[in-house]
Image 1 (cartoon, helix red, strand yellow):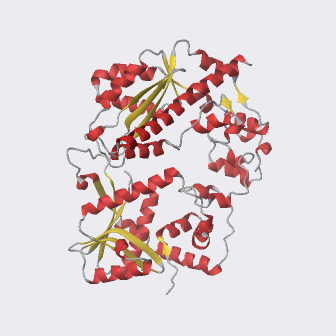
Image 2 (cartoon, rainbow, N blue to C red; image 1 turned 30 degrees about the vertical axis):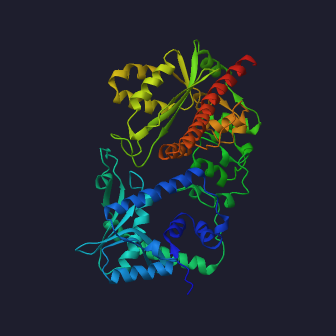
Image 3 (cartoon, rainbow, N blue to C red; image 1 turned 60 degrees about the horizontal axis):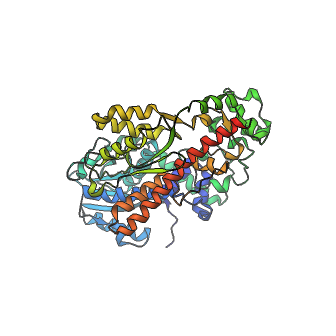
Amino acid sequence: MNIDFYSKTALMKLEQCSKSFFLYKKHPYLKDKFSVDKQLTFKRGHTIGELAHQLFPNGINVAMQTKNSLQAVELTKQLIESKTEIIYEATFVYNKVLVMIDLLVLSAAGYQAFEIKSSLKITDVYLKDACLQYFVLKNCLSNFEDFFIVTINQDYVLEDKFDVKSYFKRRSIKTQGEKNLEYFNQLARNADLLIEQNAIPNIDIGTHCFKPYQCDFFGSCWKNINLDTSVLGLPFISKEVLFNFHNTGKRDIIQLEENDFEKKNFLKITQAIKNNKENVDLVEIAKFTNLITGNFCCLDIEVMSSALPTIKGTKPFEQIPFLCSVYNGTQFNIVFESYEGNADDRLIFAKNLINQTKLFTYVLVFDKTLEVSVIKKLAELFSELKTELLQLIEKFVDVFELILNFNYYNPKFKGNLNLKAISSALNLDVTYSEIQSGLHAMQVFEELRSTKDLAAQEILKTTLVNYCNCDVKAVYELFGFFKRLIKTN
């Protein structure tokens, strides 16, 4: 029997855009490829989901014992009839809506459902997701008692042993679930109508392409939009403002005029793209570069920020610095701590960081947000180093400010203002490694800490150091680029 179910994912797409829902059901091959960061986020979710099984151990995992949705639904039905106390991935269908429940637990009052989220907070998306599952369970289980969203406890601190019950916290969504029963009933009907019509809905692009997340079919729907010339490719400006231009006929950047912008700085970007020429504020760039009158270095810090803390005294998602590169134009100096045996080596890291930077008058960074946050935390932890660590922050000069303040913009940036993209656009003398992002670097570091193979550890460490060195050299080269602009103009 071939039944076309609507998964939770599908119906959440219908909420965002009917075209996205239809493509997901009928033309899934058009989906964009997942980025490395998104893949790593999914992996984290699976890891935390499996960990949550320890809240109610020794359950039966439906997904492990079945091959398809129909088998999963049938096995779940059998387990419910036999009053199985703990079920993982219990699968139910109502009005073609199919849901898989992370944890289903039989209490004295009836079955309680638990949806596990690898985050600290309950978002609107998570709440809707849970209410949809509540809708199905309400109509499938006669003894359904309550539904909980389970998140990570932001106040949890790892002690000598991991405490799974303290690590998670739960919140009932029963009240919201009851209020939204008819809403999801109607959403299921709408899904039926769209599938019966068997035609791709004629939905234009809009802000919904990004809310709550960028759509998986972005590449397909936006394939005819040239972001190099379209107003929709302008950086810094809200999507609402850009689509207001787009929907009122001003679709090309060359159509924009000075009075279209409340913030006149946006005009600088527009003019740069219109003229295919960099916007350069020589006065402000000269002020910035002239600040650096003494010896300087460039600095970049990499952190691990795991949902599951492994170092005693740390919290979920706490930023733990493990790598720092300091570059003076000729030499890279590295601070690296692997936290072997899960020891808290942040004091060692902090001392080495101070030693590597204390002789410099200025320390150049790119977007100082992370570095400032990490160093302030170290100063909070180690009072004996507080003065020196805070003095280090006072030495910071953030090269990103020249771009953030619209003192320089190059149309080659194409709206992408991360350091790697800027380095590529300006042809700076930097060759990046295979690591794609800070999140990717975290994953490589976790691999290094988990392997016992010493040769593999060295390879992974070298990969991480090369990535950090590329970032810090890019900062140096970008500052040099701005200095040359002043000399040649």
